[in-house]
Image 1 (spheres, rainbow, N blue to C red):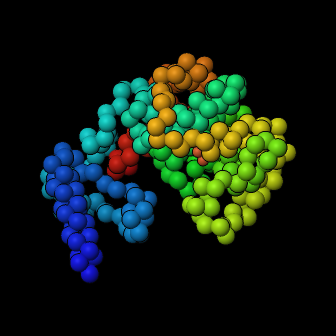
Image 2 (cartoon, protein in one colour):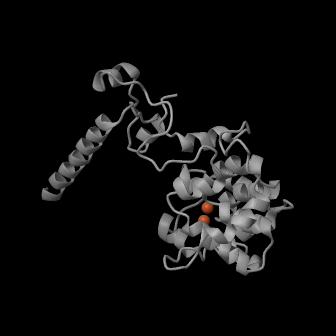
Image 3 (cartoon, helix red, strand yellow):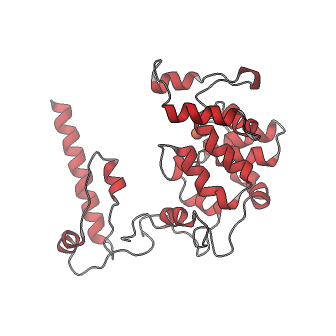
Length: 255
Ligand SMILES: [Fe+2]
Ligand SMILES: [Fe+2]
């Protein structure tokens, strides 16, 4: 009982602190429904309620001052540095691919394979990640990022990939992928870029060492050659996925 009461107090304290912070801001910062879903609530605050809570202020329609400031014309590197919650796993995967002597498309696929997890959303991260990068990379790279979502659940011993022990630990011994993942796997098996996606899985499972020495600078040239940076800034261009990058740029914009 005591710990439950303490937890509640801690939550209340956190809420009060957040509330205080929000009042300090020049504009009204709102949470999208998706953010609230993550807290187990199907909720959103309408403008009337927000205006009553923060009188005299307008809705935020730009950068959130609480987040690291992005340059006027952001690059993929800027997103790595200012919007990715962690890049260690991506860099370790890419470093592993680099040391394994793989080509730059494989290295890029490894470097970008989990960007959706570290920046956007976990569920179906392979699909989201592929969609984000599709306009800017070779189709082999985005195809592989999408397909790794399914392939990682299926072993390919000949390619050096067994079902990860980590997944037994994470999901339990009885976890079975959903039918859409099984179907995706079957389609991917016969695809011309199958091995690129498989290599993401192979380089993935070794890449959770918290002490590994990795550096984004080692990949700046490879990114330069393999990622078509839009001159307007990533997200400020008019590609089919620019809005996804803009959402990361301004996640709390009212509209
Ligand atoms: Fe992944
Ligand atoms: Fe991964």
